Image (cartoon, rainbow, N blue to C red; front, side):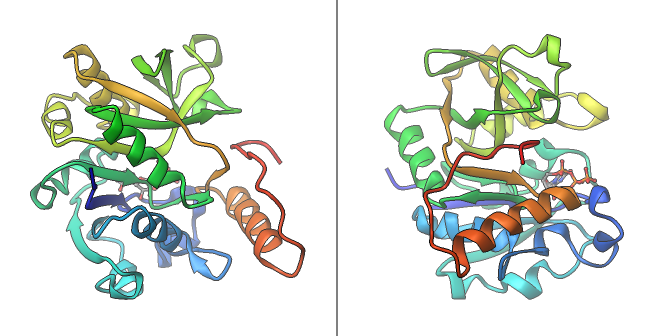
Length: 259
Ligand code: UTP
């Protein structure tokens, strides 16, 4: 089954990348010759997605100047507004009125390579008839991710940014998901959680409690959340090495915290 729609949350405040983010959304900071969000848009276009809802904040300008209608990427971009930065679940909910079926969510400040990871995640979700599929990887630092309790290919529970001794596994969500529309009902029933925000991890937890089929899929390759200056540099270092003058190599798996 084809998945035609995607949603990219890009309404965060980016405080860890200040003072750059006083002037420019972090999703527009470059990884190589493209903004980090352009790599995400390319992954979506490559996975067959035709319509992308970009979640923007009223206080952040420039995303629509950069991405425009989406025509140059072969997609249609629609801009939806999250009025306040209330957490990732709330950002996803901001797109409810433009989503009409199965959709993929990829964080706008996350760099993945190769970009085929999303086509793989979508194919897995649709072939297994899941209600939700969470892209995960073995993470070096569990305190930066939603950590899953796996059982076969199912998720039995999820904890947002646990202390290392409380982590149910080392498999963490890395910013790529596929959802059915029923995620919006779960978000509507989600209370504020970690840091007082509406956490997507908790909404997925609601779906699990309600007996929905919530699966995970391991994502191989490179994943770097470019939320800090160090990680932004690391993504650029990797990208320029792979796409520059040096001979191209096969991507190694690199996760947060590792050199
Ligand atoms: P982060 O967790 O990195 O939050 O968001 P942030 O606010 O952007 O950055 P810091 O913590 O202040 O440094 C991950 C992704 O989710 C989006 C962000 O724009 C980013 O792409 N996001 C986060 C939203 O769209 N809305 C939110 O309420 C929170």
